[in-house]
Amino acid sequence: MVPATVRDMLVNVVVDAASPAHLAEFWSEMLSGWFVREEPEGEVDVVAPSADGATLDLVFVPVASPKRGKNRVHLDLASNGPEHQAELVDRALTAGATHVDIGQGDVPWVVLADPEGNEFCVLEHRAVYAGSGRLASIVMDTPDPAALAPFWATATGWEVVRAEPRFASLRAPDGRGPWLELLRTNDPKVGKNRVHLDVRGVEVERLVGLGAGRVDVGQGDVPWAVLEDPQGNEFCIL
Image 1 (cartoon, helix red, strand yellow):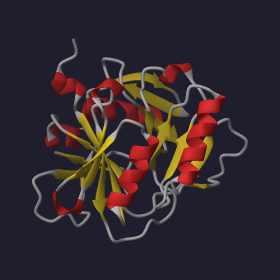
Image 2 (cartoon, rainbow, N blue to C red):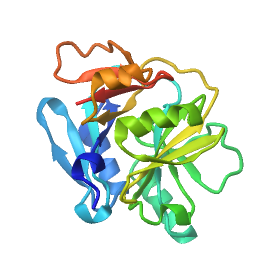
Image 3 (cartoon, one colour):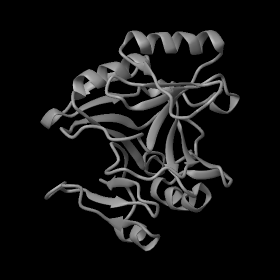
Image 4 (cartoon, helix red, strand yellow):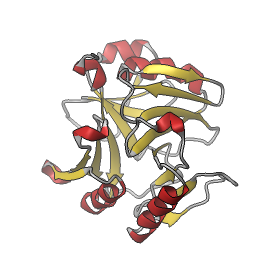
């Protein structure tokens, strides 16, 4: 059995939101069975049921600054076939999502934006995501996925399953819950990421030694550490 301390090192996907409650309701609708939990200071979480396999939460926090450019981190939703994929797309559009063109071209997945403009994908059926639950993967843009994968393996305790020039994939050791996918892109980073990851159970200095940097995003005096990975993506160590 995989130790809980390893299984649970990736804790949250955190999303900046103008209206955390509204956005949480949208994602609860898309991730059927995930439930909304209100937290102090305006934070609203969307939490997976134990049967789903995910041990991380989606965390929506109030941030006044507007979205600028395409997010460097987005979510992929799993489907079990064409009818289910179409159903998920219709559900998203009814709940306030919109179609977006980020240069994807003619692809079998559907690219949408949630009510606050955060991009996400509704995937066609892929056998590799059979054990993922509703949330297939967390996707992070980066210029060099293979080089960055070992860093995130250390930060999360997850295993690097694939590492190629175009993408790298990490998986929780027990094979349940979403994947962490690093996707190659040459798009420049624009400001602070509106979507970032929270981890725990790893020392700050260990990650700094692997190339992470300390950053100030206006967090003030907080009990967590704010870092950026070797390719500029912010994250927090709780």
